[in-house]
Image 1 (tube, rainbow, N blue to C red):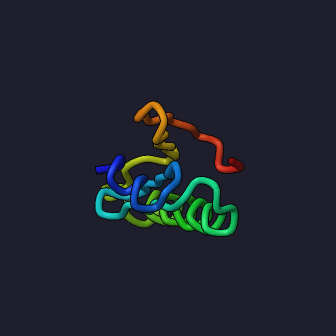
Image 2 (spheres, rainbow, N blue to C red; image 1 turned 120 degrees about the horizontal axis):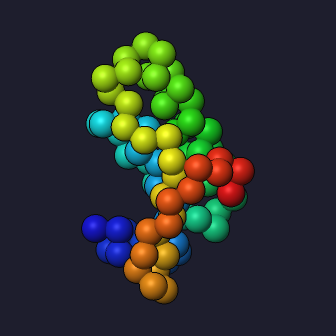
Length: 79
């Protein structure tokens, strides 16, 4: 799935999955969209951590590389 999305976007992908029912992703090299997605993912995780802990999934951020088709896991929101 990520390979197909990355090819369509013509870029590596940054992915946030803050809750069990929400997946955010965008181009890794578009700083405006990347920063917006990181902010939304972090805020969604933190809000649900307090209000609906049964919905939280992952605070980490994932980066899919088109070159090696691997996913890197990062807890750094300042990418």
